[in-house]
Image (spheres, rainbow, N blue to C red):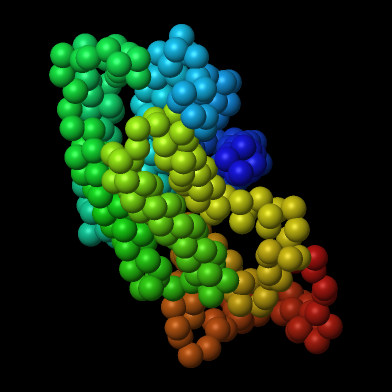
Length: 338
């Protein structure tokens, strides 16, 4: 399941990055895309090390069936997996907040998001530092599986519980901010449904984190680390895969809309044409005073006037023959391609 979920997450993320770089309107990756690219590289490294490293050296097997010479190597791979996991979950949260900053424009919510981003970066640095220096000397983090005593090792259970509890509150906070914004922002129900599905995927990642916290608490009762760590690493990788999918869901909708426009898009209505005309009028102010006056009346209509602007009268300096031509055109209007 880890391999299949991880593969799906990798493919969706690659599709998202390729689409943003080559097929989106801006044809360039944004800041959240670059952070997601780093998270993708970390995720691929996690899966490769899990399969070719930790599993090949005893992960998921009874410790009594693992050769002694493999236990130290097993410890190195587990140490690396834990470090990469901490880096990836931090990168995923940074990418989500950067995506929110590109969507929400309110001053208050942006201040909250910037504060959230600073906290995530600081806390991520702390968690990585705790993982690296959990034992002194550092090599004791993997030689302890051989029974070699360490000079000092922190209370791993207390540290893991504290870190995971804070991560759960981080997730709940990041889910609550956009949900509140979606409630007050005017958008079609289909877009709201897509946003809510994305947030529900984030809730799933949080639920997985809660399950893993329960396993961390129970791990202290095991005397078989090669077997007991397997289930925790499984849930950690599943959480990372779901998080990677979650941050790519908004772009996935755009990809599907480009591939199947009739299924995921919508037909252009007369209201869309009026809205487009209004946007062009508001952003294009001619220099000619007569045309400027006409544009002003059009803007008033766009902003809620009772009726559309009147057509210009066929006078204003025209000769009698020209006036007659205008009258004829009104009687038999010429069809234009616009």
